[in-house]
Length: 206
Image 1 (cartoon, rainbow, N blue to C red):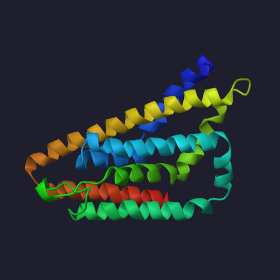
Image 2: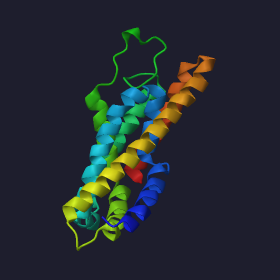
Image 3: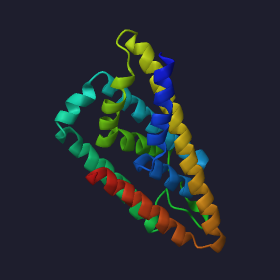
Image 4: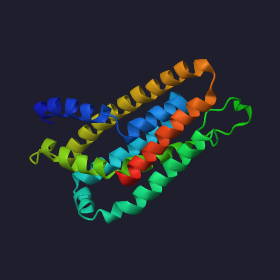
């Protein structure tokens, strides 16, 4: 790939990725409630979703979907309702994602639950599709292999995205450590639940 294009692509995507959004808010919320290590499963699902969106955007599928926004409606609403429901459970200090004062009898969220959260949040966000449609074409050189260029760009995208997700999850974990000094688990659950509900609403109506 053209090094000049790469030198522009990397800071551009990092800036966009590190900007607070649905996926980053989700990472911070899970960092608060289940910790960075468990949140890695959500990140896996999110990265798979981002890779899928990037590939489909590059081959033009996203442009077609954006011309028919009704394709997203059901997925957006279902995904948003799912995340909002989880947030409500957290707000009530219930469910698998909530912080437990006594974790001996609590059943943690499964890996599948976490992966699904990340994947749905990534692929059900029309703004993500629009972003890739706008961003990727200027960095693709028609005189070179499209496949090899996509491999390089998507590898960079996923690396930067993963880095930003870790930053937000670690920030959430630090926030939990600070707030838990008061010993008030209910407040922590309400903060995390409110953030999760906000992500769900953001996804549904954004």
